[in-house]
Amino acid sequence: MQTGGMTAEDRIFLKQLEELRLDQLRRHTLGDAREVVARAEALGPQRELEHAERDRQAALRLEENAQRKKEEEEFRRLEEERRRLEEEKRRQEEGRRRQEEARRYAEERARLREQRERELQAKREAFRKAQEEAEHRARVQAEQRLREEAQRQERQRQEELRRNKAQADLVAFFQLYDAKWKELKLSQKLTSVMLCEMPWPTFQQGCASPDDISRRSMEEFIFHPLRPGMETKSRKDRLKVEILRFHPDKFNSNIVRKLRECDRERASEIAGALARILTNMMAEEIQKETDQ
Image (cartoon, rainbow, N blue to C red):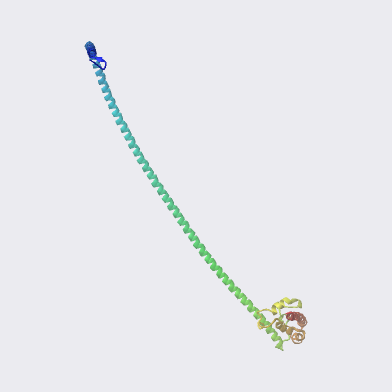
């Protein structure tokens, strides 16, 4: 019978061939094993020596490995100890550094605090001195102002006194002038009046000639605001009073004879000059009224 192109005989043949191959393989393997055993038996003592050497080498390697491991562990331990010591040293140095920094910081803070305190003290002292100086200047200025005010008031008082005295002297001078003219007019006993005693309408004393009297001095005298009794009189009325006193006819007939004989001619000359000046002043006043 044939299946898939292979006969039964072919399959038997192939099976026999496979069994033959396996048998040869077993024989070959067994032969190899026997050779190995033989060789092993021939090499037994040497192998034992080699095994012993290998064991010794292995023991040495193990011992070396153990020693190396021990040394490595010792090295690691020493290295760790070294690192620990270095870390401890570093921490100690860091602690000392921090303590030193803290000390320097505290010292710097104390120094700055002391410096600020000195600066504040200096500022307070400067402020106190400035305040004292300002108060001193204020007192000095106040005292100076008080002195100046007192001096000013004293000057005003003195000026007022001088002004009052001057006014009083002026009033007294005018009163003496009028009193002298009243006595010259009314007294019948006067016969030796000196020229220097004559009341002339000027503030200048001791008139000895017409040149000693000016129109300006007469105007100042006649129109002076402090002249008593003349406050309400006009300029014309004031001039009229003086013209009547120094008119040549009246003066020469009523007044000259009451002077010393040696002064009469000079008195007439002065009175004549005064009369002319007074007449011109009156004419000017009349002209002013006419122009208005």
